[in-house]
Length: 423
Image 1: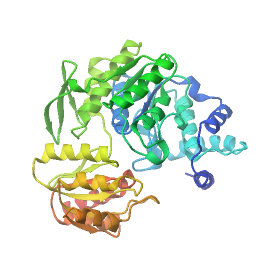
Image 2: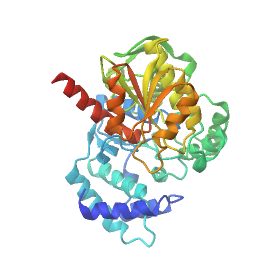
Image 3: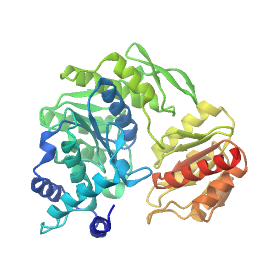
Image 4: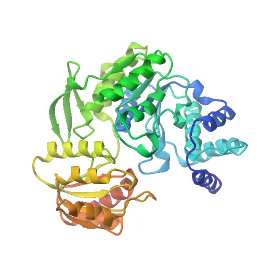
């Protein structure tokens, strides 16, 4: 990103978040409302959004559609947030895109937030590259999110609802469900992939008010056939499916994707069975129970709230049985980290704690003390590099888990360690 664009983005970041979508609507109008010329699958939810988006994107591409994918936060590099046909936007087009958006934003009396700016740029890029369908992930909540300026959608998806970001979205499931239900569009179909009845009632009411046909994924119909670190076979809807994404929770995410596929087909979107099966098998999503190394096994999972952590723990038990493994953990201070520590303690032998690269990070020593309270051997590393080195030195199977902000540095240091061992 060139210096001028970077400075402007930093200026917007310093403003902080903006409540509502007015600035985003104004900015997009100045850009010619590119979002009104696109078709969207809009995705909200506490957990599972990224995996849903990755599998859906993969299926649609296998069918031959040109697919835009917008996700947040980025996993490794900033450009990851904006993809077309799996390819991240490269630096030169990104600079040109930001230049166009910046010139319009500078004319506004009230500057947009940084997320408004990036979202507007993504809409413009998807329009300029002539995407057939855009898989659009909500940044936070839904109702007042920058992505929620779209007028309609092929499908609005709420993958699930749980307590997270309570200081912003509310301290009850019902309040959070109301925020996420804000993406329901008048007369457009909606899919709920969770199992919380309180959330379902809130979403159902929103759908009634907006004349949206609501479908609920029948998660009770998911039958696990086999699970290994090479992939998972499961049965759903009377058919057996294979997914390459690891994590015992992925069959449930895939069931939501399969339900979404049926809804899209019923609404005129051509998707073949072969595209579904190859799309599920070949979908890639970094940092979601991703195997970074073997012998010993190193897995990274971006579980960053109690529900996500419990799902990861369930997967560890499935793959490793009763055997305890080591942990490398970094968590943000505004999460319910005490509950996360308790959940992780049942599978842990040794714990290395790190401080994620975020102003919201929980200090490694504070986290280590929480694990010590659970009777575990826990150490605090001074850096992510030191943390990886310490964890790998034990030569035991390892789960790295927590904030996605740590992923890039952890993955990079694991790769360097592997390369050093090979040499």
